[in-house]
Amino acid sequence: MKKEINIAVIGLGYVGLPLFCLLSKYFPCIGIDKDMVRVTQLKDGVDYRECENQHNIKMALQRSLLTSTYSDLTECNVFFVCIPTGIDENKLPELEPLKNVCKSLGEILKRGDIVIFESTVFPGATEELCIPILEKYSMMKVNEDFSVGYSPERINVGDDCHRIVSTPKIISASNIESLNVMRDIYSTILDAPVIEASSIKIAETAKMYENVQRDVLIALANEYADFCKSEGININEVTECAASKWNFAKVYPGLVGGHCIGVDTYYLMKRAKDKKQSLNLVQTARHINEAESKKVATRIKDYAVFINAQRILLLGFSYKANTPDCRNTKVADVYNELKQHCLVVDCFDPLVDTKKVSKDYGISIIHSKEEVQTDYDLVVQLVNHNVFNEMGFADATFIKLKDLL
Image (cartoon, rainbow, N blue to C red; front, side):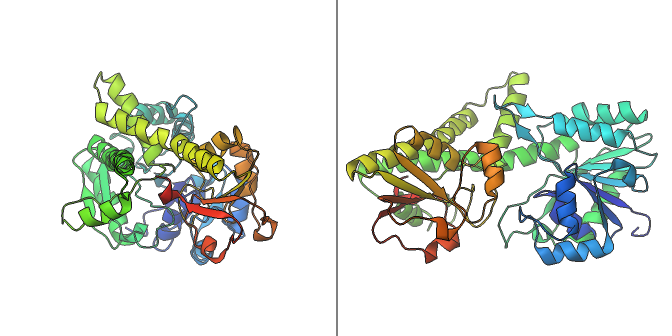
């Protein structure tokens, strides 16, 4: 099988790059990304997003190729699609990038090829959206000329424990032959079990359920935290005590950002609306979590007024600890809310790409520790980067996000 399979990975971000590096250990592999600057940087072993460690990238490049041109993929026969699926300003699924990839792939597809989607989509998207585009531009028919598979990614950014190689993999396909090929490929590269779903839609819906469940649980924690605050007790201690029971889900309150939980729910809600189905609990949970950043900002503002703080420093901008990933970060919402009411609000994060933050959010971030001034009245740590543990703010009032929830 290894001699017959030639793989292409489309999209070299948080999902595609680790998969590319892993597949390259066992199969001939080409990675492609439309961002030519990123491809050039990766060829030099540089990954500012920190999707994969430098050693693994360099090892992969000894065996495999990177490109920005689809015509370089003509010898490939298995294509892994790992592009981001986001939402637009109206919180509706932004599917143009996925459609464009399907069009480009359709133009180079050959008889016998397999296209495997790892990008998160709403149930039915692979068969109702992707396959028709592939058929149109290839002028071929699925299951007669080419096949399609779906295996939802389960990347947890910044998590060194639950890595791709050790995480169980759900697979599904348009026919049994391509399902067998998928099983062989994933079983070769992973140490974890491969779970076969009976249909592509089952696999798509399972991925939705994973992220929506997490969204609902965090919303419950956020709502319960407000109740605990009204009772004058600590939600974190309450959670620790409750977690002593074996079937309690140990989830803490917090800001819900990133590219999965706070995005995928909108894919599900749009699909449910199209199907005339109500998801009242899911919608309520999303509303609670979306409102959390403004609530945090209000509590910071009220605390600043209480201590007469004129200069505020926020620590951390990424959406989670110890990663430069700023996708859908709620710190931006907190910052923008505070800027409307407070004289000076700065944000320091040594991990993020300040140019990208400026481009995506219009916010200027302090990146160097040496640039951080010492005359702040209030310092609020919103993200638990380890680097902040080494810093001291003796003359400022210091609080953490957990104290505001």
